[in-house]
Every structure is written in structure tokens, then in C-alpha cells.
Image (cartoon, rainbow, N blue to C red; front, side):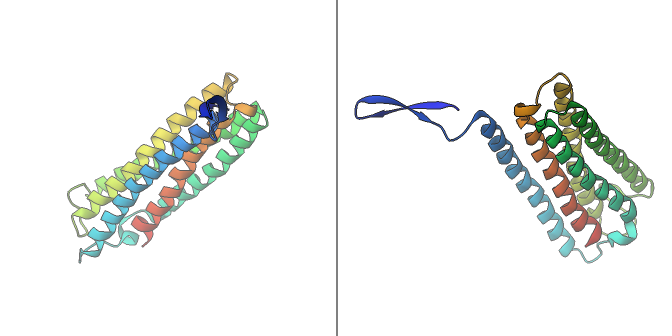
Length: 206
């Protein structure tokens, strides 16, 4: 527990800070996620405004691969489960379980990125670009690629982050009472999964 020093009636007494080094890490991640949530919120709000003001906005059910994206969504939800399992294994000092569930989480994130790359390739092949598409409003492609690409960058960063934590865990770190770092990366990964559900709902379903 960190200590500060306060002065009371001429005497110097130690006073404990309510924040531990572990909670400082969680607080830092929550602050980062709050700012990131505002970024995604702004992008989704801009998407909604452009869509509402465009009379020829294409129907996503007719133009986007809903079945593929639904499978991608289910995959990310599964990685949230494996992330919870990885944290539980880390807290119980179960190295084998930690490695297994972290690898499953990383694999799920990697497959998600590969499927997104496949989706983008298919859409560009049929003429959907940042500046136009065959179906209607030119900004349809712009907003789609910015929103899904911004989230894809977060997934890529999360996979890299998870990989670093996994490597450190294999070396004997972040297990048992030192599992705080696994919890912090879990906060980030759950946020990425939650944001995708919002993107999927707004861009693909509504």
C-alpha cells in the first residue's frame, strides 16, 4: 500500500492512500476506455446523422454479409468467455489453463481479423470503396470502412497486448496474486467485444 505523509498538530504521521499499485493500473485502463468510448460514440453518432440525412442510404441487409458478420460477432463473444477463463486460471496459479485460454482468446481475435479482411476484400471487389459504391449514398462506404477499421485496429492491438501478457505468463509472471495485469488486459478485451456488438447493431442490422 502506498503511503503519503500528512502533518497534524506539528507531528508527522503516515497516511495510507486508498489506491494500491494494482488499482492504479485498473484506474488507468478505465480512464483510457472512457476516452475510447467517446471516440466510438462520436463515430457512431456521425454515422447515424449521415444515414438519417441521406435519402438513398443502401439497406445493409442487401449489401453487407450479415451471416459472416454474425459469425464474427459470435466468435468475439466466445473470446470474452475464454478471457474470463484465462483470468480465473491465472488467479488460481494454473499455468496450463492460463496458456490454453489465452491462446484461444488470441486465436479468436486473429480469426476475427482474417474474416474482416476477407469481408473487405469481397466488398472492394464488388465496387464498394471509401468514395463510392454501386448501391447509393457515397458516404456509405466511407462510414463503413472507418467504423469497422477503427474497431479492427483495436482488435489488432488487443491481440498484440494479449500475446505480450501470455509470453510473460509463460515465464512465470502474472499468476497467482500477481494476476492483476491479466485482469487489466481482460477489461480492454471485453470493451472491444462490447463495442463490436454496438457496431454490428448500428451498421449491419438497423
